[in-house]
Length: 78
Image (cartoon, one colour):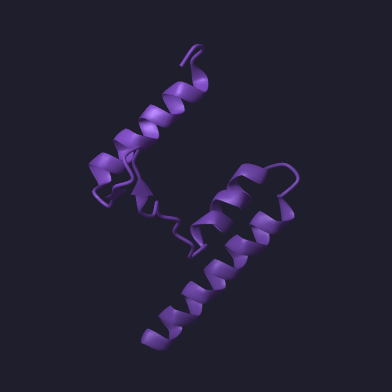
């Protein structure tokens, strides 16, 4: 029973992937969404340094530093 279920799951997955590959020119979004879901990379923000030279590891503090940086990038006269 388990062996046949495993076979059917593998067959369904193979059929789905073949369908995505055949329709890539018409439906790129689905193909790349599927490819991205299979990716194992996970990019994280490392330790940041504030204007006083202190290293920040707290997620709230890192978010505040990045927010301040990007506000200055996209506003005039900052």
